[in-house]
Length: 387
Image (cartoon, rainbow, N blue to C red; front, side, top):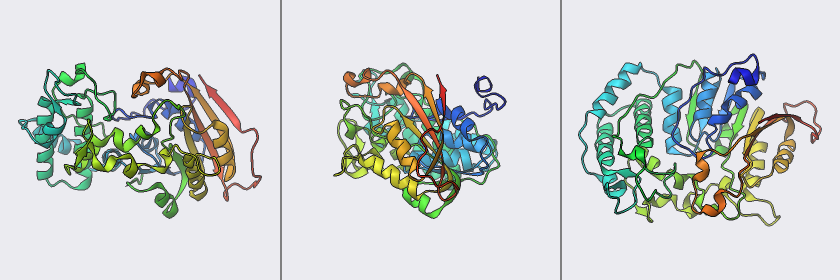
C-alpha cells in the first residue's frame, strides 16, 4: 500500500508497536517518512514521542533518533525499542520466568482489580492484577539494568494493554467487562528490530532538550487541546489518561484520589502541560499556541516537521503563520481520514459526533538561519493532499 501511495519508496518494511494511545500517529507514519525522504538529514528529534511509534519508524528508516517525552511510559518504551542491546533469547528467558509466576494479591489488585460480577468499575479483572502484582515484585528483585528493565516493562505494559477493560485510557472505566479482559495476562517479547543508529532517549521538558541539542530535523506533535467547547479541556491531560502505566513503571505505590484511583501527582493543577493549556492570554491568543511559537523559535534544527490534527485548538492558518515567522514552510500535507477508535475516549456523548470529519496536517519547514532566503513569509507552500 505504501508503495502504491508513494511511488518508488516502499515503507512497508517498517513495523512499529505500541499501546492504545490518544493521538497515536500510526496511520500517518508513511506520510511522515515520505515528506522527509529527500532531505539531507541524519539526526532526528521526536520531541513528543508518546507511544514512540514515530521514534521507532525513524530508527528503522536509518536515522539517528533522539526520543523525548515527559512520560515514564514513553521513556521505557523508547529505551526498549531504540536502546536494547542483548540477544532476544536473553529477554525471552526472563519473560518465561515471569509468565510462570503464581499471582498473589498486592497493591495493584487492591486498587485496580475487579471481581467478575463488577460490583465496582475497575480497569482489570483480579486474576490479572494478581499476576501483575507477582510480576512487578519479581522484576524489582531481578536487579536488571535500565535498558533491560525497560524491555521487560514494555512487555508487561503491552500484555496489560491487551486485557484491559477501558476505552484506551484510565480516566474512566467501562461499566461492563470487555471481552479481552477475560483473557489471562501473558507477556510476550516485543519485536526488537536491529537498528544501527546512534539513538538517545530523554524524559525531559522539551524546551530543555532543544536548548542543549542540535538536530537536522525536529518532529513535533504537541498535545493540542481540543477545539470542541463541549469537551472539558481540563480532562485531556496525558498524565491523567495513563496514570496506571506511570505507576507500573515507577512501582512507587503513590497516594491515590478520585473514583478511578488516579495518582495524586496527576491532578490538573499539578501535572498540566503548557501545550495542553486551553485558556487564552491577555492578547487573546491561546497559551498553547504561544508555547509552540516559542518552541519553534528556540529549536536548533535545519528542518522542523509539525503534526496537527483538525480537532485541536489551533487553526491550520495560525500554525502556518507561526512557522513562517521562523523560516519557510516548504510543504503542507493534508491527510483526510475518519477518526479512529480513540475518538470514543470521552466523558459525554454530546461531543463525540460533533466533528466527524478528521484531517491530519504535516507542515515541513526550513528554519532560519539555515534558510538562505530570509523573506518573512511564504504565501503558497507546496501542498499535498491525501484522501
